[in-house]
Each structure stands twice: as structure tokens, then as C-alpha cells.
Amino acid sequence: MAEGKGGVSRRGFLKGFGTGVVGAAVAAKVRLGEAAPQTSPGWDGKVPVVLRVNGKEYRLLLEPRTTLVRAIREHLGLTGTKVVCDRGECGGCTVLMDNKPVYSCQVLAVEAQGHEITTIEGLVQAEELDPIQKAFVEHDAMQCGFCTPGQIMAAKGLLLKNPSPTREEILRGMSGNLCRCAAYPGILRAVESLAKKAQG
Image 1: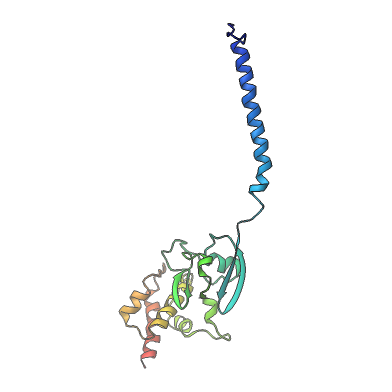
Image 2 (image 1 turned 120 degrees about the vertical axis):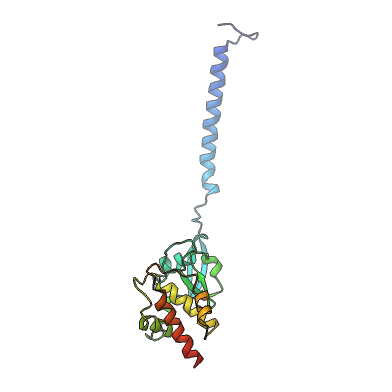
């Protein structure tokens, strides 16, 4: 093996170079390992969130990505609100935010702070069903019942905004809520019955 001008062979050069690279990598790894606790102080990523749901205030620690429906179901134990599509397409998770229907799978819990949230559980007062709940029972406006909480909350929001809607307004107001059992005629009758009562 030929030697260079300074008397260093290629083999010697490569050996020395390889040792230096490995040593530098090990040293860097040790330094990174030592620095890790300083860059990750053990913070779990959760933030304080205050939600007002059904007239009560709840203080929670949630990940910022937690949706309102997950906070309601998994952290407050209010399981009447259903997760169906989880994509804002079916209305199954509808709740009222300041008396307006919203898809709770599309609202972050942190965004719901400072607003009044009403779930299906919040409609019952002193163990008495809300008139819209009674109307759904009376007019057989459900089959499997899975979409029913969202349907009722959408109807409640519609009637709060317009107590005596026309059939067209009911159809438009309820169009964001799907029923795979096709109980639409009963749902329409239930909402219409309350609209007629409001009209006198």
C-alpha cells in the first residue's frame, strides 16, 4: 500500500477518519440524550378548558385537538350526543351553541369556551321531557334512535329561531341531519305539530 508524502498510508488515513466520525456521532448522541429532558419538560400537551354545558360549568384539562363531541362524551360522561360520521356530514352529533345548532364533531372544545352548550340531556327539566322530545315520541319520529338526539337538537334550534316555520322552512332547517332508517315523515310530522301549536 503506497504512503502519502507525510508518511500516512491510505489504510491509516481511513482508519483514523472512521474512528473520528464514529466518535463524533457517539458524542453527539450523548449530548442529545442529555439535552432531551431540557427540551421536553414532561408537559403532556393539555390545556385548561372551561365549558358551560346544560347550565353547569366544567373545568377540564384537554389536548387542544379535542373536539367538543369528545369532550362532552368522554370527559363529561354525557353520551346522548352521538358520534356517527365524525366528519360534519350527518348531523348525528348536533348540539346547541348559544341556541344555534352546530356539529360538535367540527368544533374544538377550546373554541366552545365562553358559549352556552346544550346537549340532549339538557332539554329535560325536572324529569319532564321537552315538547320536541314528546313530539318525536308521539309521531314515531325514530326507528333505531341513533340519529334521534341530533335530529331533536336540530329541531329545537330551528324552533327557537322560528317557532312557527313552514313545511319548506322545516325541510331546509332539518336538511343537515341524516336518518339512515328514513324516519323523515315522522320527523317532519313531529316538528310540524309544534309549529302548528305555535301558530295557534
